[in-house]
Length: 283
Image 1 (cartoon, one colour):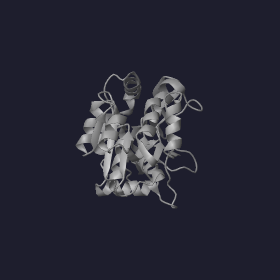
Image 2 (cartoon, rainbow, N blue to C red):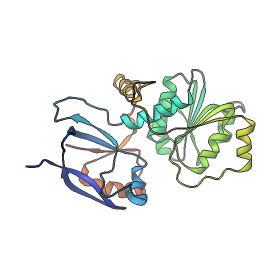
Image 3 (cartoon, helix red, strand yellow):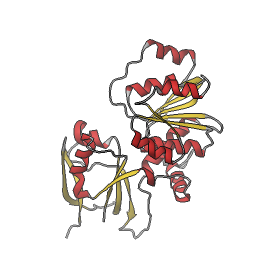
Image 4 (cartoon, rainbow, N blue to C red):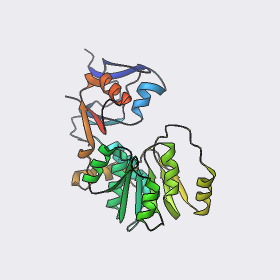
């Protein structure tokens, strides 16, 4: 008899159903999934934008063990977003003693701030609109700025004697934070765009002039690298999480079973309650 397993399958935009699907075909390894994290890109993929083809099982932040081969390869449930954050930090070449600002205190933003601290950044600022997220960042020892209460550019310039930060990571994906990341970075500084932007971006003349006059270096960052050269960012991520030097557990706000997938995505899309890193946990 063919082995089957439960999965949340997306048949069309907004049409997410929990059904049984085949487990494995010839030439594949069977992985017993333990947890699946919800990436920020998964919500619009399920609720508004759709996928490249239908039906499809969404989700790429997967942890589990190789079951059919008898392995016991336990993977941390947040390896993928943690490696993405490391990739962005490495793109910027964060160095010891530098001042770093991260715009967006979601899971990837807070993890990126931790990587910056591990690499020796002297001061790290985390900016977000939501105090619930900033509380998590504050508990991890970061200096936080609530952008709903004060102007983050003015605050950071004040904290840096008018110079700005050496490196700014845009991890919120909002047009306004893309502009702010340029404005709060010092002369000859570096800006990393890593957030999935939610709308068209138009840069005012003064912001473009700021890029030119300050001779900024702007990087794009996408996904992560799991090749051996120059650095396997997944292996590095697993090592740092295993040693406790990188904290990911405080970022998890919700755990659902797969049967709750439609309700969970509706909650996130409608923003019915605060959420940070959301996981689907499999028995």
